[in-house]
Amino acid sequence: MKTIRIEASRCYDVGIGPGLLEAAGERIAALGGRVRAMVVSDDRVFRLYGARLLDSLRRAGLETAQFVFPHGEREKNLTTYGALLETLCRERFTRRDWIVALGGGVVGDLAGFAAATYQRGIPLAQLPTTLLADVDSSVGGKTAVDLAGGKNQAGAFYQPSLVLCDTDCLATLPAEEYRCGCAEIIKYAMIGSPELFEDISRTPVSSRYEDVIAACVAMKRDYVQADEFDTGKRMMLNFGHSFGHAAEACSGYALPHGEAVAMGMAVMSRSAAAAGICTGETADRLIGLLNAYGLPSELPYAAEALAEAARADKKAAGDTLRLVVPEEVGRCRIETVPVGDVLLWLRRGGVK
Ligand SMILES: NC(=O)c1ccc[n+]([C@@H]2O[C@H](COP(=O)([O-])OP(=O)(O)OC[C@H]3O[C@@H](n4cnc5c(N)ncnc54)[C@H](O)[C@@H]3O)[C@@H](O)[C@H]2O)c1
Image 1 (cartoon, helix red, strand yellow):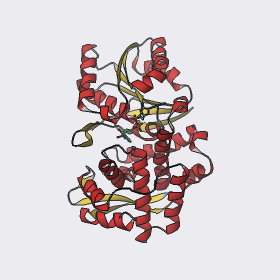
Image 2 (cartoon, rainbow, N blue to C red):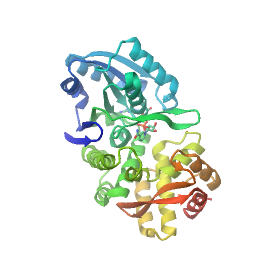
Image 3 (cartoon, rainbow, N blue to C red):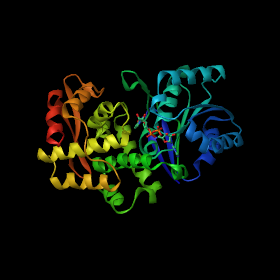
Image 4 (cartoon, rainbow, N blue to C red):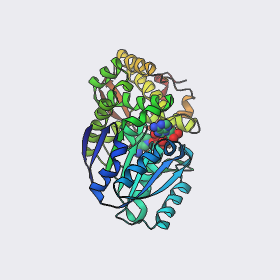
């Protein structure tokens, strides 16, 4: 097992390795005592791993309750969030008790926002079960639910007290979810680690989960510790996301997040190559790796529609947008561009 310590507004360990669900009860009891634990999960994940987690919590002397909702992004909304808060209140949870999020990014974001706001904040353990949640959403304290007007529009920065990435859970991950996690891993490699880029070009991510997740979490730790509230350096983690979010919006959120990010990274790298910011070889290497992992590299929407959606994204600040642009494999920079130029960046990246 590997452990990475995050020192942000709250300090906590991220454990990475097999068998961690079985250890969750002990680990939480060591931090919080014999508290009560509200396990929050979606129906698919709970069916697979709920019993194992509940057993571990009970063996450690914790009292348990559970809140299980239907899987999918559509459920990451105010209604489900409200129902979870009401359940916590009805079960008389106090600020000593814990929320234990068991699932992918949808569960983690929703449970995290409830932990941030129930009684002004109760302890949270993140037990991610998707590759994307392991390398990204479970660490760093961004929590949110979606509003009718957009994704992640209501939320809070709220760090967990413990994160356990049990790599055994990845054995049941559907192929599409695996690919989406790989898109985020390729993003980390492009923004800061040529070594990781080489590693995952040579050996599939699935053959060495523990090392790859640890490499990504260590990078995320550095960004979060430098810029917890996402006003500067942390924005580098948005590589591929400005155009990716625009593509998600154009698809009515039917497009999986990881695929959208892959498309966004590919178009951005073509655009950067056309502008002379990186070489054509850098763009080709990125696109080659995306394709090797079965990820798309074209944005199948009209440039005007994408530009309009990018302007509406919450990451746009007034008249400008900060784009993360590749310089070479393992190095990117942030460019502040007028929103009016987004169309040009898309067109230069080959979008019609
Ligand atoms: N907070 C952050 O920093 C952050 C970062 C990136 C993404 N996100 C959010 O994360 C969400 C996407 O997360 P996701 O991709 O994990 O999606 P998800 O939570 O919807 O999980 C994807 C699907 O896989 C299933 N699943 C999960 N674990 C499984 C397992 N081990 N075996 C079999 N099936 C499993 C789920 O039931 C679901 O149907 C989005 O809402 C996005 O906004 C948040």
